Image (cartoon, rainbow, N blue to C red; front, side, top):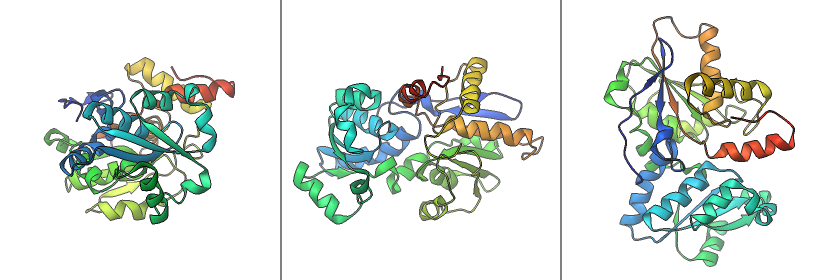
Length: 296
């Protein structure tokens, strides 16, 4: 869709390696590229000219769909959670970028947004915008899982553990399906709670996985000075940026588990860097308002 790359895993310690999926593209990066790959192909094959999807103020998915649509010649529509945002696009780096890529927006209240999957809501969108190819919030569907299955390559069979951030469950489902029988997949949810088990089971065809629910930092898009310090130190030491919503929390958790002895000494661990770096600017705007340290 954007480009294909041959990636070598980056070794951080004797046991921990990073797969740098974020290098695929600045905006259609990491798991967003994987999730959109077959959805965009399907939209093309079925003759759609418009793609519609959903997201929040700083959504990686919204930015990725906008960029993919620009590259592939699709019109794009973003249904955005939060009516108040329509008056502040120029102050929001994600929405500003998506707008430059040609995305049109429909801003809805948080109450209405909860109804986004209902037939009445979808039918109203079709009245407003005409026919469109619908991609769900976060991009997770069967085609997205198929794309995420391609994250793992033949060389990755050498690893005992595969670690990844979890949002809507599509990425980890693809990793589970592509994993070997000797491997365990560890998911680190960015959201508080353990409700994703059911969603993952809809797509995953194996049971060699576990959700580690202790590193969400009190919920989605929540962050504190400890996590900021970890992200900044990690970048300084490894020349690799981390986003604060997904990969930063996942790697914080992986290192903490290593210190606590969760992994055996001879275990080989592969962590998936799923991208999301475009969200750093938006997070820094919020951190600045709170007079907290910024992410480098």
